[in-house]
Image (cartoon, rainbow over the protein chains, first blue to last red):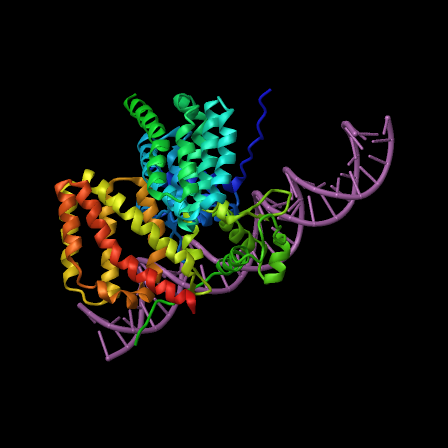
Length: 239
Length: 239
DNA sequence: CAAGGTTATCTGGTCTGACCACTTGACCAC
DNA sequence: GTGGTCAAGTGGTCAGACCAGATAACCTTG
């Protein structure tokens, strides 16, 4: 039996999703007014507080602007939304947006080495020890999905070692976008399983306080995955 | 008369701020339960819907987890919060957190060149023309605050040229954190006013499709500002 | 005719009090 | 121990009312 936790969706969650889709999918363009809260409540068959909670959450992400007395209007999310919106954009209607996915992989490949270099500057032996522990758990896994989870865990420790709040929060946002896709992506990344050596080099470089080597090792860690994923996205995009 | 728009704060905004402060300032640690909605409403002297709207917004940022039937608990924001939280963390109680500010400047200095290189690969002459237009407006400004605003505008166009949604959203998040501080930071950045040449070089490199030069030019654009700011933060931190 | 005030009617903001749905833990029977 | 029952506390939702700001049409008024 493969049991998973049942997933509940409250009324306001559903309103949130529906309105978000309208905004993100371009049904409503920047500057367009949303229907009034009362109208939305009526159309969706829910109470006004439920609608309000959803709208407030959407406003929190910067997608709409609600003005007391005036209409709630849609903002240009390319201009006003933050990185927290990424998970919602990456997978829409349970389908992966390959153009955005490419952008995620690209950013990951470029920023990862920066973080690795910082980690080498600041992490020290303590960080290396923590990384060694993660690498140890790596060794015994052959399942690609589990491998990716360990890779995330590894980077989590690297980010900690880099001791930068901005990179920490960036990583959290990217992880929130990446993690739900891991099960689907695992099948594409079977070749990477077992390639432990770059991780060891990176760990050693961080332990030795050698930023340049760490940067290079990070590129070797991230490169193959990036190549596999970008190739797969290219195929998907052509279909 | 120096008049500014009056800033309104709704009841739920105030609840949002207060609870957020409790969480972020560590009054409530990870795992701790929040008071119940009814209790919060009573203590703060507001209605329960107002409390709920605030809590839903906080939950949206990943700072707390609310479970139907159970208590709403605080999450470790270093683990679960996204980049959108940055503005709230950077300036707290109307004071700048210098450690975080350092992290912001650092990330900006490292990521900017990456974006510039991408812009050179993808922007082309159209991007260069748009940048030229911004640079033109640069030339006639002597006020450091206005100079910084133009710099933000310049980078906005560069990010557009890079054609990467992830960097776009990152930039938006960082901008949201940086922009409110610009008036206060302007006084520290008087030396940069008039240093137009690096911007011109960067614009030319993007127009010519030369990523390596663009990267180097971006470093020259960002370097001086970073140095000034980091120096100022170091002094502030010692006080 | 232009400028400024008035008013009707939209919009979002807040409150009240009730009820439903879920979780938790204590207690009880087996 | 195991499972069932139940009460109390929590968040989720609803209805209806009223407050407060924005907007535009419609007046006055000079």
